[in-house]
Image 1 (cartoon, helix red, strand yellow):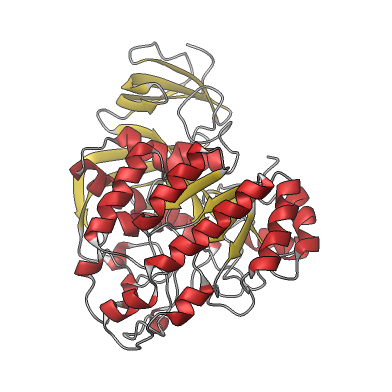
Image 2: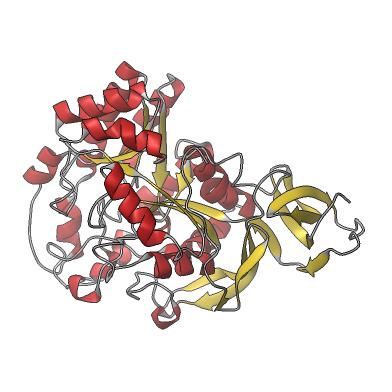
Length: 446
């Protein structure tokens, strides 16, 4: 065996070549070799025998709203990264809103990095924001190491982060394309949203009607046209409308540089089960019907949808009123994402290798971290989750690490218990016990 300080041994290690019994050697926080299960342990190395628990690469969640600073009562780097670690996530990329200030200038990025330093239990990177008036800031942010730029095509829900109309979108996309950067987009058409029926109150059916699929489909069609014209890299955030899938598949086949994500709540929750007044289920775009969900799963299987991320977007409990029209729209899911997706995936005939591809390998690739993250392979960071995939637990909001323990998964029984999480060869959480923060702040260059 090559030089190693630590060896993790399991009968089930998920590698890029498949799942096999293996010994994983680690030195200086990096995987040095993936060797046969019974390879001798070098003198001085510590052996962690994981038995039949599955060793998988730590998940990489590229869509998280930490809200820190400015709305730290909603969430924060300390609580968000603890929740992520508890759920097997070892890297997250923070959205440029709903923090104050938003990450729309280099000065604002530095503010956020100062706040995060010393509080991150896992590795953290940052997205920049594209606003109508900050085209001049995009190149400096890119050079400062943000992983790309977030834009809304419809109102974001917070005044300090306005959406892009057609002309500002074209200007921003052209500038980002010139950098060969990545534009990530909340794609709902504001005109179709404005013309949809708006009926306040507790009925989920009324809220669903207020965010029609056409709004997503029209916005995505616009993005495809712009991306094709500029040869720009565009990523569709939190896809919920299955009606958009054929045009996305066609665009990919034509070579348009477009990628797509969806979220655990769209894959595991359905409109039919949302109780009236239960705004813990509210998000934008909304959770849709079970037939729509089936088509999202098919698109994951065939590669039309690239990856799965949480879009963790929490708030204080008082903002989750029983009026769907005015309640804050966002699902808290960091700690539960792996278990939620695995529970549904196993029912649909998918394996853990598929889940790792959607939630670690492809997310790492999306943000250019795939030389360090997203796989158990020599040369990658020794970031791991140890999972008991056949054990179940019932979601108790009081047991979550999120700052505000409001969850759409309350009371659900899920498969997949995370036994421990490791960051660069150091165990950062096991059996509910956390170490002091060991996360690093990442930039695109790093």
